[in-house]
Length: 87
Image (cartoon, rainbow, N blue to C red):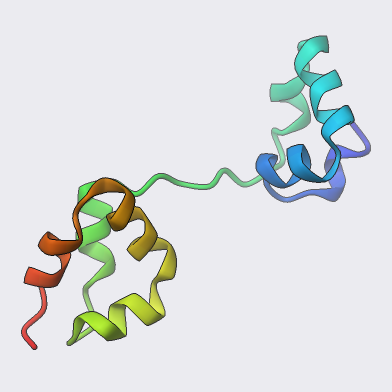
């Protein structure tokens, strides 16, 4: 549990200290050990559309919101994202 406190995200802990992470999984205390950690969010279509607000052109959004762009790419929504921009 002390090892887990060094990390902010479960995926970082899993990558940085695989043995401790697996011990927590096997021991049944993974949820308790990661309670303080920030969960990375999933990009829903609504959240992706919301991320485009405030940008006039697609390239601005892509540069400023790389995680949203990656989420749109994974979801196959890049064409829909491009259509939201005026220029």
